Image (cartoon, rainbow, N blue to C red; front, side, top):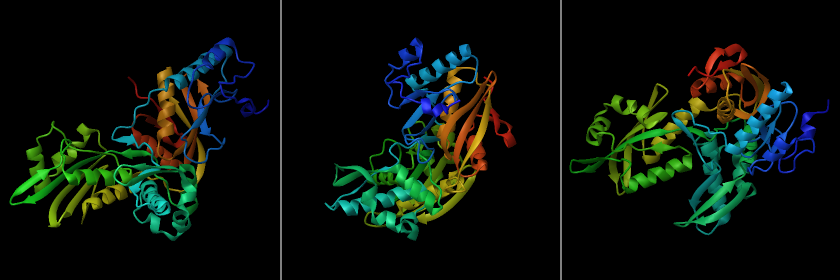
Length: 398
């Protein structure tokens, strides 16, 4: 039989052999191309047709290897999932960072300088390394930053918002041998206490309007780190005392209430006009680390630790693996499992290889080694390992 990919075509221009039901679904207006094939049930690749680069806009395709009646049901389910957007919930303790390759930088009228500064921020954000822009291997990339600019616009406060070519930058990072940190980032709960002098201390919280809070949030955004502040549900007076005294256990335990994957605690003391020295403590995945520095030092500490925990190893290596998931017995289960796998940090593409009455096998393209895929699935927590060696998992029982 001919390669099914030869028959791919957007649903907006349906294949002549599609039946009336298929053609009805071709009228659904979706942002991505949708196509019908004869081999795999639902997957996505980059628009170029390869697995390389970030899956930002994908070409979906539907197929089946089951009897015609069930085939039609699955095909319909695929199309419904695409049309409806197939609701997806981010893993607990993390969220997807929007516009990972867009940054806002100070603008003095020199586009080239702003482009280089923005690309430096992107390299730090996507590699998780503070020193990435200064590595010799990235010198040509930074020097020719304008080549990687997709768009830019003026922003408030003499700023320039710049969007870069994510796929090209990821390819350059792959070639350097460093790993790429995906847009799925842990949320960090921040407890930041300030000594205002004369015995006055204050804890930043969700309703604070302090200048230091705005500065910290801007720095977190540039690093691509989602943060959350304590809110009215906490006893902020007691929390301030705990942050300053070093009684951090209750503050770390609060991460679960806030849906955070890590906790950053800072105790800031003034060192001059508008400057602070902060004693930082960071905890994630049961591990803790400490450092002392300015306001940005805490974010650097968190990013370094997250990178060590979550960045894939075997940078630049691409491998394909069959992951079988049991217990998928509904459209919601099918669609959410597809989305779950595609959002895992080391995953670059997902397709369905086989559908059986009690399981679905997915062909997963991974940046890094298979152990990184297994660990990412375990960290996500929504699939139960049945046979890790054979990459067989199951949806938890209701």
